Image (tube, rainbow over all chains, first blue to last red; front, side, top):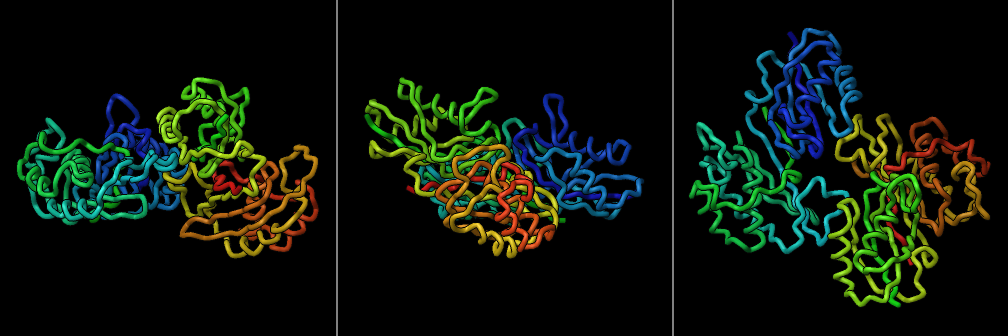
Length: 244
Length: 244
């Protein structure tokens, strides 16, 4: 059996997230359907990150198995001709039989885009969170450093979501300003659900002065979701990269 | 009567162009509707450039008249709260009673975006023409210089469109490469319908080697639409700026 990995880019606006579910079209079913039609057999697909509804990806990694001998380039071209325009396969490659897009991942990089302008541009509203008031990206950058390292991220988890462990290891976290855009970038070995969006929602309260920068580590240490800020909207979030 | 000008940005994907017409929703009717609801009286709106179906704008200028004394900032905010997210009012200002968005314009700047990558990104497919094969932007830049100055642009007009004069004055024309993007920028005192898209369609044939760079001025001189290349798709075209 061949084990094939593909790197995907998608606009999540029109999908109910990655994972198959009964109430709406998902990226998993569209991707699996396209692969199955090309290979002419059913497949299971494994995604590196199961992005939530409305979340985008520029570096999602997916693997699946087949015994068909279709050349890898033809497979990629075929998939791109079959997939809707808001989903693209950027690369396709043969990988070791033991490779698993999720379990083999060493870390994932998410980035969150904020646009800080008086009005949200028609060309960016699908891909960013619009903050029209003054926001200090430097204090956000200082503040987010608190999440680097191993921490219990219960304060930033999705309400009512249950985990064996809520400890996660953040390798790198920072905030960069590029023109009117502010990017929050977090690399971690794993994430809790809504973790990035809850961190961003809280960080924006610091950036706009509604919380002090000392409140943030206190919220993290409290391990209680009720102390953190609102969940930032899905449309600003991008799964940028998965490292193996 | 106050004369008010607004600068608009819009994603033209979901509209049948600027100008009102029976077969689909247009930017003109949506804009006029929003203004009329805020002013509580019917208005005529005059646009600097009547963009075709699917064409975008980052600097459309529109003017209208009112005797209402609503502050200009409230008008802008009100419009943005009423308009769909793919249309924004970037600025609003009081202008001289004699100002007319179209007739007062000294020149207009259009830019056309081409993406030269193996696969079209889900984040760009609405806003660019995808050319997957090798394309030489330098030769395109050399070639487009031929249109600068006053010329009869019949070779690049919309088929069957009738004009009193097909002579237009191009002030500036150039091709720039920025990463995977190629931008064709044309500033002229006036344009024929489809002129930019027909020039771009022909220019791409030069860039990909299907035409030589000497063919281009010959096509322009022929004044015959049948000699030019195909019309480039609307989605790559942006009305960037109108100068007064």
